[in-house]
Each structure stands twice: as structure tokens, then as C-alpha cells.
Amino acid sequence: MLKRTAWQVYRWLADLLMPPCCLHCGRLGSWLCADCALELPLFTGPLCARCGRAWKGSALCPVCRETPLQTNPIRAVFLFDGPLRDVIHALKYRGGAEVVETLAPRMREAWVFHGMTGEVLIPVPLHAGREAKRGYNQAALLAASLGREIGLPADEGALQRVRDTASQTKLNRQERRANVSQAFMVGTGRNFHGKHVVLVDDVATTGATLEACALTLLQGGAKSVSAFTLARAS
Ligand SMILES: [Zn+2]
Ligand SMILES: [Zn+2]
Image 1: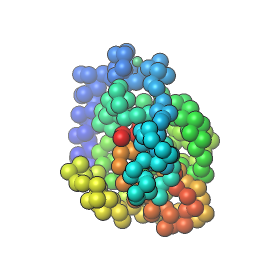
Image 2: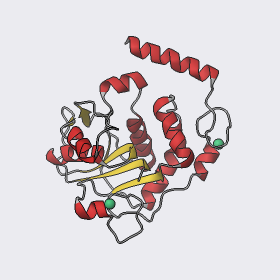
Image 3: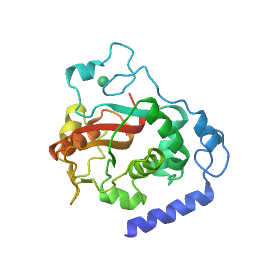
Image 4: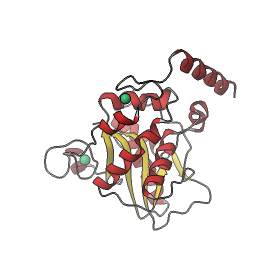
């Protein structure tokens, strides 16, 4: 509680001293203005048909040919590059939740472009402690906004994180995968039996976190799990 209050005071002071301004054109008021949101190029490929990473060769990238993820497909609105990188940083660490609404029409555009389908949007959960500190889960905001745009329900409590796996930058690929497996559980009272579900997150990197969520949902009876993220890091 004390931690949360201290964070909010810090955010308030930070906004007072450095008010949000568009990270692309500098206009005051938001970390991304509506005009610049329209200018960000969608990531339309070439990409791997399955995991969605930038890939120029045949349909599947080498990673998917060797060990394909169960999350299929993974698609992203933008590449994790240029001003969007800073916008996502602002969304996660500078209280920039408002950028989600600004980006919602672009999310819908990419959703349609990639021919995504599904019955329910499920945000990747943050660890409760992290969410309390930040005041929101950015993935839940993205799922809710996208859901309103495309007319699908977003279920924030669908998955719960039982272990904090966020600090894993020093781990290698295999260690990361082990670290995130069994990190999630299906929320109480939820039943996704036979459902086509779509995971939503801010950035897809190795896909390990999405995969851990997908495996939890597939074990819970989901028929298929795909993923849609704001950005793709390759
Ligand atoms: Zn701007
Ligand atoms: Zn791939």
C-alpha cells in the first residue's frame, strides 16, 4: 500500500515536472497524439506464418520449423521499433495508459488485415504486486480497447499469474521457458472448453510467456489459442 502511494506521488510529480508530450512530434498532452498514431506503419510483413516474427524466407521461420509454439498464429500491430518503443515504455513505466485508446483504431486495422478471428480476448496477466504498483495491467487495457473496436468480449480475470516471472532478462531461451511454465492458472469459475481464444499482450518477443498462457488454456480445454500483441520484437 505504502509502495503504491509512493509510486502515485512520484507519478504525480513526474507529470507535473515533465508533462506528457507526443514522443513522435512533441505536441503536449499525451505520449502519442492522434495524428502520429495514424502515421505509425503497421507491421504487415514479410513474416513467419506461425509466430509472426519478421521473416523473408519460406512460410515458417527456422524456430517454428524446429519447435513450433502452440500459440498459433501470433500477430502484432507494429514492429517494436522507432517511436513505438518509447510509446510502450511510457505505457508501462510512465503512466501513459491513454495511448491505448489512441492506438485502438490501429489495432482494429491490423486485426482485420491479418484476418484474426476468435471468441474471447484474454490479456496476459501481470503479477498482482506489479499491477498494484502500476495501477493497471497494460495488456488488460489493450484487450478491453480492442474488444470494443471489434465487438469481442475481453476477459481480464481469465488467467491468473501464480508466480512472478517478469525479471528474466538474464535467462537464456530454455531457462525462460522453464521459468514461465506453470506460472499461470485459469481464473476461478472460468471455462474455455471448446473456445477459440486470443491472448493479448503489449510485446511478443520469444513468445515464451504467450506460450505458457496458451498451454494453460489448452489444458483447460480451449480449442485453439492465438495471440495478438501491440508490437513484435524479433
Ligand atoms: Zn504527435
Ligand atoms: Zn516462426
